[in-house]
Image: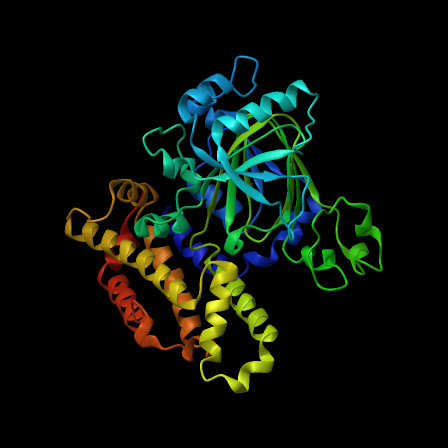
Length: 431
């Protein structure tokens, strides 16, 4: 990121959430065939929160596109079995509904491949239903495989940076499913961005910009399970369905990568036997959306258990516990998340200023170096902004701050001091 981009993005991030209306009026998605600089992607897609599609050129050198795919462009079951055989994998039944998703079970990989072969032989049908291997942490289970490389456009990934540090989870997934498998209507975890690359096969995406999902709730306030189902048009069940815009429909071909913006609800179909790589990720451009999501989640919990508010001394803490069980994170862990991201960038700026080596993983050091000093400064500014918002938030004030792994006031002061002490470095640096 260059100096002009850094200064511009600091103001653009405040207004970019409203800009999708301008995009929507054109009703198309940009297709990126040629080389694109990170700065242009940052300004044209990340900040404005606009979807786009990258051509197969960006995945042509991936090992998985060569090893996992036959010459005919189909899944190479033999090669896949050689690599994964008895590995336990999560498999969903697309023909069954459990709340607003599909129930999952863990089975050996070879059992799923056996099912998939039979499903194809039977004309893409099976008494077992339509099974879909999804949300498989293949990269975490097989770190030595290195079958793909995260494109630089998606490398500013705070979500996986944080969970890699904890070494307990990640948001990098492999999906494998037969023709007809699909994913119900949803938005991604924490309202993160996502990118999805088709290793083979084709997908159809139905995307709705933020806010449109409110028209696709039933009379009880529940989000639609299938936006293509006939009952969506029943005004008694879905009273506001006529107010929803038509979805952006995108066909994704083999090798292509789709960028799904933050908070865009979507529904996805496999039009052929398909394998894909999917990452959820967020960074300084959409961390404010995550913070708003957490506030909304907490408010929903508070409404649910409002009647016990005056009978429990620890009511606010119980709300945090319930929120974490539902959404996967609470305010305390969000503060820890911000600290790790900030610490890494402060360390990076300091090491560049003093020509010292960093003390965090090599791949992270390389990523920060590739994105540059201005990007690290932008990240710190965004963390500082969210910390300021948190310190003004009444629910956050009510937490027992002694239980936090770090004190937000102290972290905010550290960020300000680092930005001041390294200002000459990142304000004069030119890429």
